[in-house]
Image 1 (cartoon, rainbow over the protein chains, first blue to last red):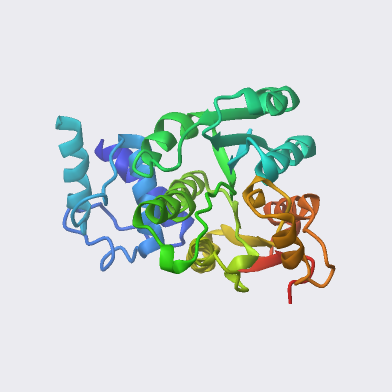
Image 2 (cartoon, rainbow over the protein chains, first blue to last red):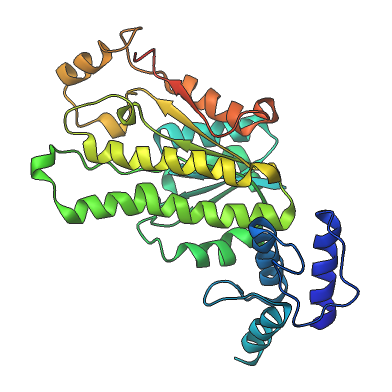
Length: 78
Length: 241
């Protein structure tokens, strides 16, 4: 799962001309550290949903990479 | 194949829009309406595997997520969405009743907003520079006795469209409205000839708006020919000025 998620992030950084971090640390903040704007977060939502069948922003706050991972893991366990 | 959703494709303007898209040949049409299928047999024959009819009541706003995930997404990539379906609850304001008003807002406003949500998500996922066209109404721009409630649903959709254009323009996704004048369709069937005459006299050309002209404008706004047009509306109303 982590690998697939990393692939989604790297694709998006490339598409949007953002510099990718050396590693996807769970503490990295999507907006503040990775400079993702609301449209990029929307794109992240649909890509993650398509891959993992979970809408990460549907309920509650998702701010960091760790939050995204938790949402996916929570869905996979349910 | 890329698809264009047309709601209310079983009759009137919606049917003609679906027919013209199929004749034009670039895209497939996914028709969404309450029709069980008999009314769209001719579209099925015309389009073959380029036409899919989904029987769905847009009054069920909550079900649209499932409609997208289970029925629309598996068909393939969405290129466009024509929000044509609408219900009309006409009365003077002093007679306003909440239930039919809420139902009309669900069908005319909430359902197309929800559908737009999934259309945009699909376009984001597939990097589609798509086009959304809402069928509005001249009643949102000039006043008619008895149409204030219906007109307000169309005003809401026009505002939604304009702001959507702003929001998603950077991704190449466009949104526009076509604003027809009064046409001779089932939507205006309850009007008497005298009422129709009075309405038609209010436009420069003194007659009803031609469906074909409305449909051509919708096809134009869907097509690449209108690639620099977004966030606006085109009046097709015989000059209701």
